[in-house]
Amino acid sequence: MYLIGLTGGIASGKSTIAARFAEHGAVVIDADVLSRQVVEPGTPGLAAIADRFGPGVIGQDGSLDRAALGAIVFADEQARAALNAIVHPEVKRRSQALIAEASADPDAVVVYDVPLLVETGRGDEFDLVVVAFAPADIRTERLTTIRGLDQVEAERRIAAQATDEQRAAAADIVIDTAGSLAATLDQVDAVWRNTVGSAEVRRPG
Image (tube, rainbow, N blue to C red):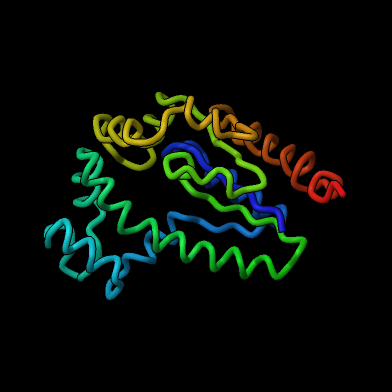
């Protein structure tokens, strides 16, 4: 099995890259999806969040009010750390189970899309670390025009994550998503062709 860690800041184009890897046959595991699953109603994760942050972060239907929680944690580093201490262990447990399942196929290529790879110091767990990159102004524009955040909130969320320099230092490959979709996909195709898809590279012996 060949394990790729895919990371990048919010609105950096990770999902586009992951989808292209999937088209090439990779098994994609999305940490954001797992992070939602571990705080679904009835889970220990959601109970712990309600305990720590109060009933105001729980919606009338009993599910997590992500907007209310986000307003708290993106404005308070200690609150964000507390949330991460609740969610990250559960996400890691689930991701490890899914990776182990995929490893039943020795030729599998697994892409783990994990936004906080750099922040959690997990780079050494992967055969290859791919970083999606777009300048902060482009990411801010994507957050405001596509995701509907106001500019202040968009900039705050970007500032709460690792810097571009920190991600670049952890990267084996950087994919620039600031250009056209075709240019981004061409870069992903090149990674697959020259690194992931090469039997000589994957199994040097």
